Length: 399
Image 1 (cartoon, rainbow, N blue to C red):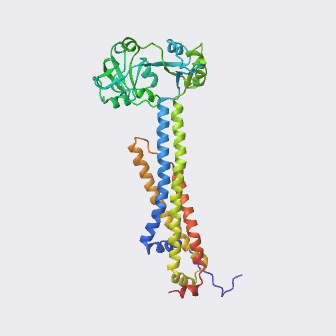
Image 2 (cartoon, one colour):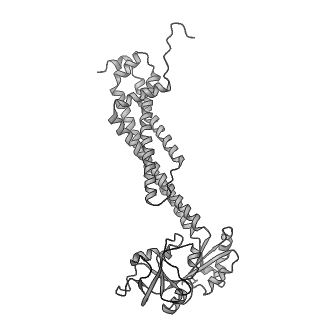
Image 3 (cartoon, rainbow, N blue to C red):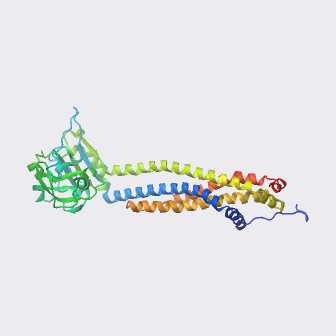
């Protein structure tokens, strides 16, 4: 029970706590900024890493939504003797008879090279392959031309070629209408394809019509890759019967894959890389926390007289602890806020440069802010306890 002569120390309101903490920071602006910079770098790194990863993953998911996940690819496998098998000439027609299949097309490997002129040695291929292409290929892949047009019934029978985007770049061709040396004769470029994320092998190819490949390049008519699309709900069922349909006699010699799985794997790989980079950001944040703790310890040593005077005027140990803990929290919050802004700006800038949709998850911002406060508490706990333990007489006698 309190008696009339008992003195009850005044309590610090939240507003007073903030004012006391800010006053301690304002007296040492240079040191405060340098300490906050360490926190800002750590938080900015973590936010930027999560933001860039999320933006990249969102771009991949949008590509999947646009391109669809219902594309399957069938290719020849190996025989029992280790030799590469061949797909039947009429394999595409048989695939198109599968009920849920909406479209199917094929390409066939051609033993020829393509060069910008006939003066370039045949050995210099630039990694470009030549393939015969079905007229339904572009529609099946949901592709489009960046320049010119796709093959049609007329051009598929004549020396006309459509270049994938990568192939055109390596040949130095930027528009339709020019000629390239393909096989042992000139072919006219009638089109250049846009990017095909689900069929990157097409981007590195020079595509001619099946009739033209047979007439001018000695193509044997056997497809080497079959692409087919089916209803989304029937993809698994179609995949189960695709090998037996493509090659009824030797279904074990047919390899079936789903190209969209590659994009999904890239999204998963992005998440793995994010975890690694977050570890580096956490290390930077830890270093920033050590800087804050060092700043607060030095602050306690330099302000012994102030601490002693406050204690002599009635300040309790708890109030001293709150004062220095609030300074540490405010210092960390200053760095954390700057880090959130810097990380978000870096994410948006990088995403825009890559033509990605910028995504900064709210959970990342909240987590970064929480990490900032935790670091502030941990970094300021020891200095605050040390300041609270200083006896007033010892503090006031310090010179």
